[in-house]
Length: 452
Image (cartoon, rainbow, N blue to C red):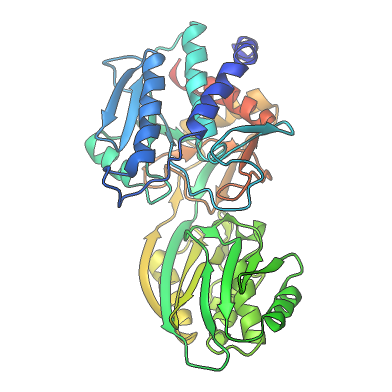
């Protein structure tokens, strides 16, 4: 009913919308619990200050929840029936960008910058969806609440605090996943491990590979006591897509980073390095190669490899591998189907890690999340999707942990579309202009349909 008016509004204000996106992209909002600025550091604080400022400008009734999150209500004094939840923190920029990751770069009909798809671009789309509804005078009879958090990428402590302090509306969606509706999220295990490497004429003096446990490493830097040329040739045989060079006596290996829940989209430098080292006779890597074969993504070699009809095949990725002073430390990311429990997955992988000669260490896990697709809430979102896009709406399952994973009935509604590769958590993260415009329309229409 309002689609034509909304499209005209967004087209008219696109320059201002992109200005807002550029502003929030420029804030390097990597959460940091070790910072003196509590709870999540200066970047997160600045991003949330930006968020509440924008909500205030919309005329919403706002509140700062002790620096953990901010929110704005459309109708003051009325309990919200709908919540839209997104995060303003981001993962570290990393290397390999073709533009400044904290400066919006518009090229090839796409918007580049850290957070453009996860979650700053969608957050701006939500803000302008609300602004359009308010300025066009579209009638809303029930209150809705926009919530911005500042610690999604480091474990969602912001939302743990928010739920205890405030609580969530019964209906809740986040633009932190995929369209049409993501109602099934796999469980997750993040496990660290370590070992000591035996003394040998061939040894790894140092290795740095991976920065965060939920991203496939796209770069490795290692220094060895053996022949660099021998190892370089072994790396080339392992995967001819790798970019390999020598810098100051070290070997630098570049592959391609990807989100930990989508390891098949990356070129994992950690698994490539351990295979090449093992092939060249460096001791201590045979077990790791057996558990983490280069090019395998489902954990089958570790005794896993599960799948089910709803959530599909599981994934496993070696995401961190460091060596210093003869000590090896690593980390892995597992996303498992909803018919399995954390305890079963952890039992299997810890056994495999021990068999490989490693000591399992710190573990962080989440059970799976599933919301029945027959609910009126999900069916309304699917109808909105069909009305706006002209495509059939359906529910999907992913390995990514969205912002509503710990909530009772929350689902993800966007911001990606099926089969898109927006380089989430990797270099050159982006959202196409077409997808961004669809985000604006879909969030505006969803709010209208759920609160009219």
